Figure 1 (tube, rainbow, N blue to C red):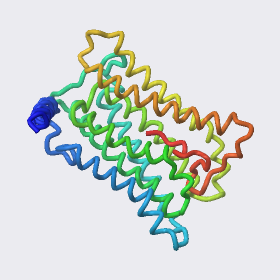
Figure 2 (tube, rainbow, N blue to C red):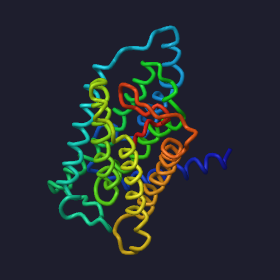
Figure 3 (cartoon, one colour):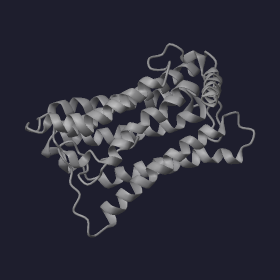
Length: 287
């Protein structure tokens, strides 16, 4: 019992030390005081899409939510465009270094602009849960795959430390590139949701998947390059943490890309009315 108490106190002490390293400018921001609400919401998300949702829909017909999908995808296009512009204005389009960029912990306009963008980017990961809820409501359970749920569920947990400790600098390159890709991705989904008459404009499905894979290569290179910069005033451990996520998602998308576009034995890929790729467990969706 004494050993258990000792290790528990050591754990508390180390957690307090880690918490002391937080960016105090973010204190009081929504969902930033603890990671536990994030973990709870992610757990609830998994429960809804894998257990409660399918049980609720068991004896019901699929919902016709096409109008909702149009507005939802349009909303995501707007959010992605806004975040990209804010991150571009606050650093990545001006004085940020693509080799090594420390976090500006000041209260300058640009520093606060990218801080707020990082926080909104974190919150946007929860809004993307709606993708899966729509699959459940339309009883497209084949698209609520393990990869899809892990992909969506892991991102809020992964992004929270960046918004809490490093809301700016090197870490935000991930979000900067990601929202750029999301702008086109949700634009594709929006066109698809508008109806069959717009299907002729969806010829760039494969190019969208390619763009998503290129993004992960860029994030990998950007994160792991700090191994060559000993004097970079940014924690290399967190840069590697981001790079490791890019490796994971690049592997997932590579498997999908090969299976979809190069495997002659695979079925023809088709899109549903939301433009989601029918054979893709994560519907060709990036973080």
